Amino acid sequence: MKAAEQVLSLATRAVHSGEPERRPGAPITTPVYHSSMFLTGELGRYDDIHYIRSSNMPSHTAVARKLADLEGAEAGLVTASGMAAIVPSLLVALGRGGHLIAQSTLYGGTHSFVTHDLPDFGLSSTFIDATNPAGWESALRKETKAVYVEALTNPRLEVADLPGIARFAKAHGLVSIIDSTFATPVNLRPIELGFDLVIHSATKYLNGHSDLVAGCVVGRSALIEQVRHKLIHLGGNADPNACFLLQRGVKTLALRMAAQNEGALQVARWLERHPKVAKVHYPGLPSHPQHERAKGLFQGFGGMMSFELEADASQADAFLRRLRLVVHTVSLGGVETLATRPAATSHASLSAEERAKAGIPDGLIRLSVGIEAPADVIADLEQALAGA
Ligand SMILES: *Cc1c(COP(=O)(O)O)cnc(C)c1O
Image (cartoon, rainbow, N blue to C red; front, top):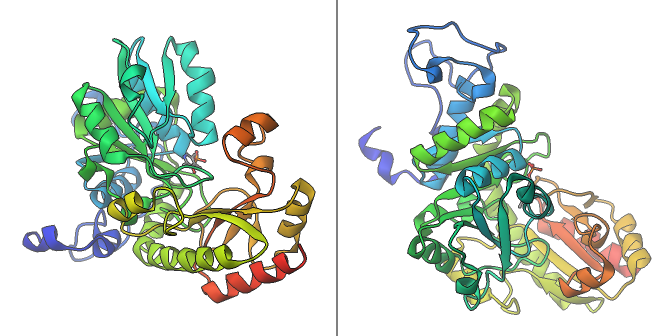
């Protein structure tokens, strides 16, 4: 088993890594211990105390090991939510008085934390266009400590110059952090590109079944230990039941992503030909502005896309109400195809002008393609568009 470990594919490791040691009588899945603490053994270091908030129970370490393995990272930490991975990672990377360079189109919760909460901690930030290196240097300050980007942006699915960002961080001694939620380790492995910390909202693709909230961060052991210690103070540990469900969900990640990569490509190609669709944003389409970059970076283009209807807000909402199979809701990454209107949900707090500037018209629909037969998803979109 040991010698062959290096050559096992990601699909195989998603099933087997982090699972209990094989010995007669051992369980084949990691049990959930409904116990807040474990008996103290050798009274040694603080870290020898096993307490749920310390994220060092078997449920935590098993799933963290699996996720670190899939990303090719030394260590991992599972957290209560995606935000519970993002916040301590930023606080650790920035330290005291640090300055952050961040991609301008971040996930709403992250954008809000960077804009509204970092200053309360005496920390500052500058937003950049991460798709284009011109302007990165001028964002640098002597107190700059970290750079933060996302694998694909929401809802326009822009692809940043990710290898460029990792090199820029190395050249200036910055901690590089990427939120890879939209890509998953099936489609992108940021550690191989040189990123220091890779974060996921495991609520999305990693779990994949729209039935829990969790997050993770992976990277070098020393850095992950610092993040874990920050998380202990923030109280953002994952619940062992969530760990169990997440560990089960991840086992089928490769299968689900293969179906979602393929299904989304079919749906995007179909939508692009539809007369009532003005524009489709999907990195797998040659019409996408960073299609060539996406081809070089990603193993698959993922399940996320957005498309523009020639419609005002109420007409676009009527389209969403006509959907029968596709679920009209926020969030993403589940086995079921989900649709939402970003102007009314994720980007509702922006003014109409800010949304126009960000390229988020009222008629923009975001789709998270699930694992249903693509023909059924297309048929549902077709009947809903027919009424438009
Ligand atoms: C959902 C999401 C988050 C936040 O994750 P939670 O699990 O809801 O805390 C962060 N980043 C991205 C890209 C997301 O989609």
